[in-house]
Amino acid sequence: MGWVIGIVTVLVAAVAATGGFWLWREQRNAKAPRQLNAAVAAAKKAHRGSVVTRQTKAGKVVYLMPDGIEKPAPAVVQAAAKTLAALPKGATTKTAVVTVTLRGVPYGLASLDVAGQGYGVVAHRLAAVAKKATGLATVTMATGQPATLHQLVDTDPARRAINYQARQVLADNKKLSDAALAAVLTQPLLADLNAQNFTLTPTTLTILDAQSRPVAAVPLTRIAQFMKGGRAKEQPGKVIALTFDDGPNPTLTPQILAALHQAGAKATFFMLGSGIHDYPQAAKAVAESGNEIGIHTYDHQYLPGLSVTAGLDQVYGKMTQTYYHTFGTLPTLLRPPYGAIGKQLAAAEDLPAIQWTTDSQDWESKNAGAILNRIRSTAYAGGIVLMHDIQPATAQALPNVIRTLRGQGYRFVTVSELLGGRLLPGHQYFGRGDERPV
Image 1 (cartoon, helix red, strand yellow):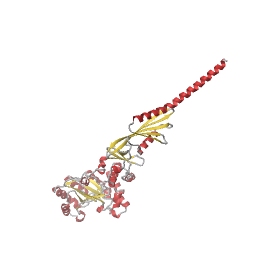
Image 2 (cartoon, rainbow, N blue to C red):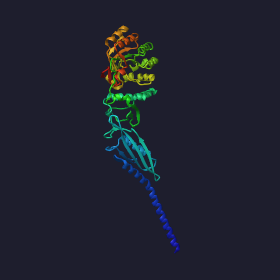
Image 3 (cartoon, one colour):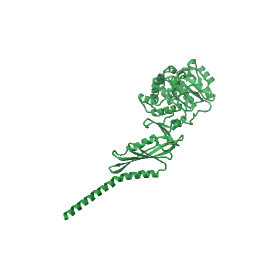
Image 4 (cartoon, rainbow, N blue to C red):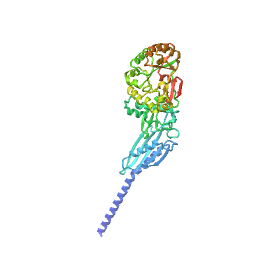
């Protein structure tokens, strides 16, 4: 009888041990999920806005949104996916708590800041990761929905001008190869006024690619004049811009520079790409002396007579390559040969066309006295004077031209200074206050 009691005792002990182990295992297995649920519940309780829960293939996402905003922006959904993906491999019960805050930025928009907390169960333990992103997307403050470029910019030429500023940021002083430079000039940026591929902070507009990766960060100080409310800051008073086409010339351009330097005056030079290629030191001397440089196409062809492709090669292509490898920057001003540019080419390239108000006719008279008389009789405040630094008579006349105009009360400024910096592609400028679509 004693042995029966022993067997029963052993069996009871075994059952108790098995039950205890089972109970311990269940408690252990439930501990991490309970902790997870408690963490999510605490986050929800502390939040004072909208709570949106979504079940995805990767796991559950709890969006803690600003009050009144019910739909997470695409960039926020991507941030949630990244938070879940950051959890250890093999984690179960994956959950992301994504807290979205709006930070005010200019133009009545808001920048999305996201703090993602990811939770998962790994080997019966709670695993957690944290992911943060600031300036993740730009939205309309009232709705939280993605902003469009139209909320920043009124016109398509202004959009194109902003794109060109972004190209400058990508290229200037980067020592790019010809292939890399061509890629910058054709880089898809802000496609139209409905574009949403950008973020905005109080200081910077960042353009994104199709995968929401940053492409170019453009300081707002560079593009404020093209944004809503932006205005040209034209030079007031009796100012005039002297301009020189067709150079550089290794003999005459230095004479022009010497006359400008002696008079303490600045001018704008519209150079041929072929001239820059042949006389790079003369070209660099113009820049080093503080004068402004624009382009006059590669070899002075009549642009309306070319196909758009050939015209683009005269403006971009070999022209911009030569300019870039000489000066390290992209050109910003175009003077079309003969002042002629067709609408199709003007719509395809992003430089403003600079015309003139006074033609010195130095190319025709080739006489210093005639040049002086022509400029003296036709110049006016806010005007642009056309000359050529390949004409010996122009170099001879220039000191008297400067002396005469200064005696009449004129101040000498560059084209960009005269026109105030808000120069739009697809537009042509004849002088201060005289802007016309091509």
